[in-house]
Image 1 (cartoon, helix red, strand yellow):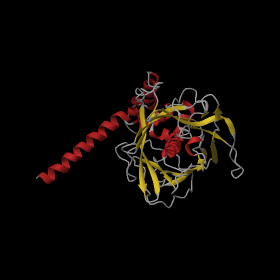
Image 2 (cartoon, rainbow, N blue to C red; image 1 turned 180 degrees about the horizontal axis):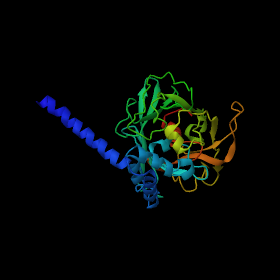
Image 3 (cartoon, rainbow, N blue to C red; image 1 turned 90 degrees about the vertical axis):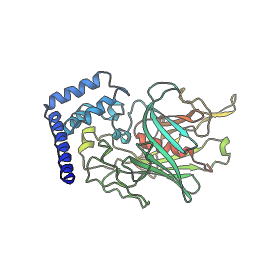
Image 4 (tube, rainbow, N blue to C red; image 1 turned 60 degrees about the vertical axis):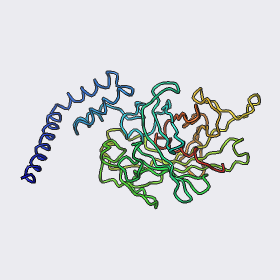
Length: 350
């Protein structure tokens, strides 16, 4: 008897859920869009109030489509809303201000979106990373879930992997940066789970997931060790700025957008302070060899790269013993910026 009743109970639950979704999904599309628009207008421009928009998008497919039509993508709005925003390029005219908290004992790093100006800001959690030692290499596994950093997890986003010397790093994305991109030969090839409905491009199950090389970071050998500034060079496959949020939900075609070459902005020697200095505009307050600013540079080996020595694409610096600010903008995504900053924590000859 029990064996017969249990399936019926499960069926009843399933029917109820379908009824509930049908009730909400049966509303006129115009009405749903107006509801979502009003939610955003009523104080939903910043977190934590912005979570109401995410709740609307989670109701059902029709509400998700309405949210896609109303909420503009990160490059246009300058606001991080859904998990897919973490793999979209930042805004062009101003940086997204974030900060990183380090837990040395657990080898953990947490990325937060800054909500207020100040070190007491609790922030909005975005991603976490954990450092692992794998033979001669060091890996930083990046996840949307601070409590689950397995590469087999649905929350897995990508990873950073160093060479033996800790001077060269590769960034691996769990999603292909463009059509026909080849997965790396690293051991893991995992899927970005469907539980994160707004995960970058994972909406389409036809798109394969794995570990795709989307960037390289190199530190040049520094004879002065920690007394001199580090020299960094980054070669990145950056996300397209042309892909709209609506298309990111439906597209099956991903274009190669070219290569961005970055290098650290050279600091100047301050005679009075007797140290190397950069202008972080108040965002960095503690001197550290980890502090850096990256600018775009033209590279003859990459004809599509464009140089701009004035605009800081990414800056990272120390404000407390275990707190660092991270400000990034187009063409980098939050995921790429976080991975680049993680490379500065490793022990290296540079």
